[in-house]
Image (cartoon, rainbow, N blue to C red; front, side):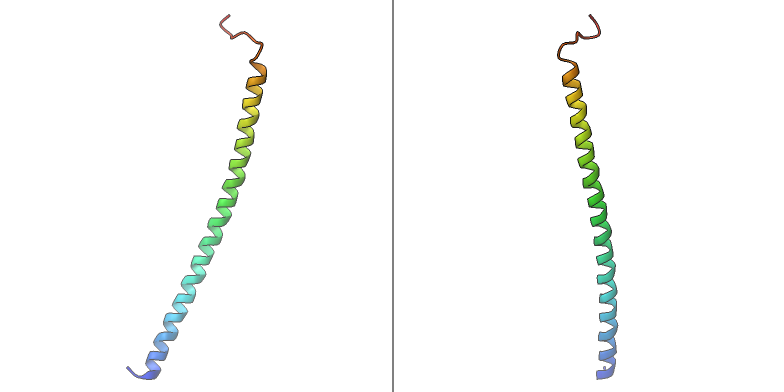
Length: 68
């Protein structure tokens, strides 16, 4: 293989590597967006569960169960 052919092969490989790195960066970016979205959702759900628990414990302290 001549020097020029080797140089062209290296350029082709470099271009493919750059494309791969760009694709991986885009994937990581989308995954991070999804993680952020899921963290926000988990926080909201935790608040909602806490509010339901507080409401249930505040309302059930003095009331008789429905079967009485």
